Image (cartoon, rainbow, N blue to C red):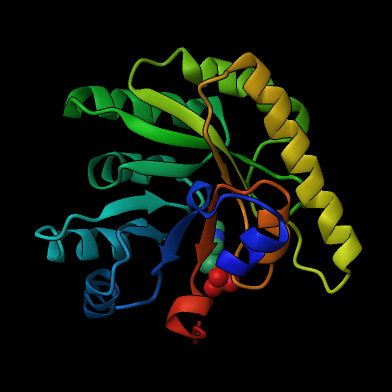
Amino acid sequence: MRQACETAQRNCERVNLLAVSKTRSAEEVAQAYHLGLKRFGENYAQEACEKVLALSELDIEWHFIGPLQSNKSRMIAEYFGWVHSVDRLKIAKRLDQHCHQLGKVMNCCIQVNIDEEASKSGCHPDEVLALAQACQALPQLNIRGLMAIPLASDDVERQKQSFLRMQSLYKKLQKQLPQLDTLSMGMSADLETAIAHGSTMVRLGTAIFGSRNQ
Ligand SMILES: *Cc1c(COP(=O)(O)O)cnc(C)c1O
């Protein structure tokens, strides 16, 4: 990350590391925490909640990064401080209601399906502005920015185009919502490209914990 920031001539302090701990045990998370990591990302609500409870003594900031299902929204509202995958107003309203009951504010990113892939969650790039503004109006949601999972590809140029589109979408949105401070993109295989295109939070699993079996 430091090297990528130097190459991109960016201040390292502007890029945060989210350790993606899906499939990892609570012990592994605790180990990473004691080595200095404080932010952890999880994809599956049930699996995550067990870890959050087991590690409640630690000062961890938990981020939900998986697809959002309505029937899990209460659990997610309760156990997480951030949700990166808000992609429709219906689920945003549910989260807002649950957070109201819990007396908390949820940090949210709008997930964008930047390559318009049929298999992927995220709202269409053209819908981002309207969705962000509608979410902004919900009192318990604090809209922080955008998240994307660009198409995995060996074609570096094509990937750059996806990151570039995210960067310009984020800049455009910031003009409407100047408080935004988070562009969540970049995973183990493409963190350099993401940082070169303005990412403020890279989500790394494999690069930290090694490869997953699932
Ligand atoms: C699994 C996952 C990551 C981490 O991927 P790695 O390639 O292991 O770094 C990041 N973001 C999301 C949304 C994920 O599901």
